[in-house]
Image 1 (tube, rainbow, N blue to C red):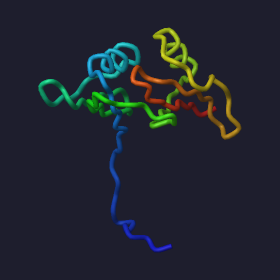
Image 2: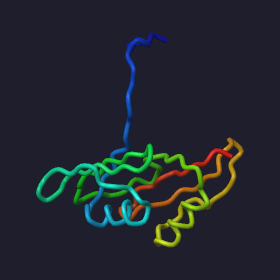
Image 3: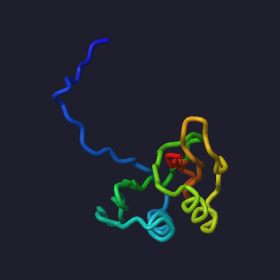
Image 4: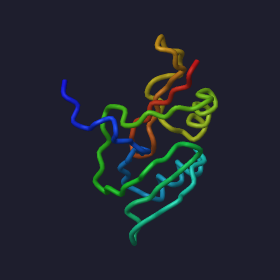
Length: 125
């Protein structure tokens, strides 16, 4: 295999871009339930927003006709999957895959945000 990007190219952060049909509803979930903070927004009405919490960063993009995919679109590593699972359940988020220990060394579950975006959560066991 030929490497096109040489190892001298250093990659920086990469953030998940989540399509949402209602920016206020998405912000209420990610900020209100999960504790992310809005660090940037653009447009009137707002069509793009950056949210951060700890090392996590999400970019929300307004897509009024958004139809959610039936697969995971982001993977979120946490230090307490049980606590995040409880928060998601308390908020009423749909749990797609139940919380369980996986044979690949993660305690994991999958939930849907209010727009149906599936987020795969993992904690190293």
